[in-house]
Length: 124
Image 1 (tube, rainbow, N blue to C red):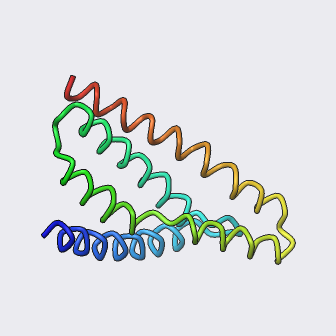
Image 2: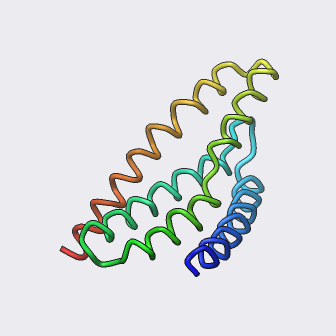
């Protein structure tokens, strides 16, 4: 039955991604895809928390799979980020495209590490 929980979590993650993207994009205008950036960074932070809770035994593997694989797997969106980078290149926004490749990578890794560390501190 875990597959059903993953499916429901995935549906919630995809819906949340849509809502967050619209919310952020309506407030931060410009060429840079801020909605996707916010989604991937926040999803990485939450994945770090889930991982920290998993390694400390505070959540089960099944729970981590549903949250990280289901919800966060559908919430975060590498493919959209790559599509947006290609679109920026086509539009001649080379610097913004390069920023869209590098900035989310660096900030998302830092956010995941921060989430993991926060989880360890809070449950430690």
